[in-house]
Image (cartoon, rainbow, N blue to C red):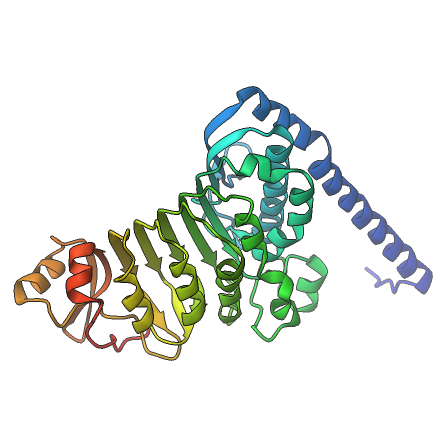
Length: 358
């Protein structure tokens, strides 16, 4: 077998063929998002007139006879995440065209290793804002939305970075992560839903060291979104600063339950936030799970110095709604649901941080 070195003319021809293929692919994607797929789904929704719940999830067909999977493999990651964005665009445009009243909207709530990049939400908002999406979105009372940090899904960039065909790390110093376009999309989407009563917002961060900058997602929400009817709020995996989280909470006068899970405070301290929670008149229960402060080891130990031995034993035994872990022979609490009476009695004064980074 002899090795053939391509001539410049052959390389040019191969490049032109590649460009034509990419252009054809882009055209097909545009047609899918702006053509018959949107119209067919809009027509179907219009016939229904009203929906209790609309849930968007991923299912991966593994091929004839091999079944389906709910999570992409490493080799499937790039194409699945790109397709997830396309499906989100089709569904939201179809909602805008149909005007159907949807009470609960769930976007990748149960999808494993797949979320919606915040940049893609932001880039799609002009299309939604011009298609009267808000007319349909005003009926939405419950939103569950799983978003993610910036991803590399471009095949050429992956190859240059030596990544093969799978998603991989981007560092927070990467210009694409630092771009201001990454952050306001979620806020712009929420502004279309003024009657929300339930919000579950999750940030999935598969990329190394790119999480801290995404505190600006909550900052944009706190600075531009008003949700006067919000009663239940869950924030999962979101980094935030003290000022933005406080501002967001101060706007939620009707809030009944709050859940903070894997929330990282990138600046400031938890004490002013805890103090404010005790002053919220409608707040009946707070659930804290694996909350932490940037720069400190591990997760906060949620046992109070006011707890009696019996109360601590109840948490350890599981008879109270809490989750514990053991470190160096000591049982520590990383998850607790705290009702209002305990909230006002303990005032979120917890014991020292658990000295474990996990």
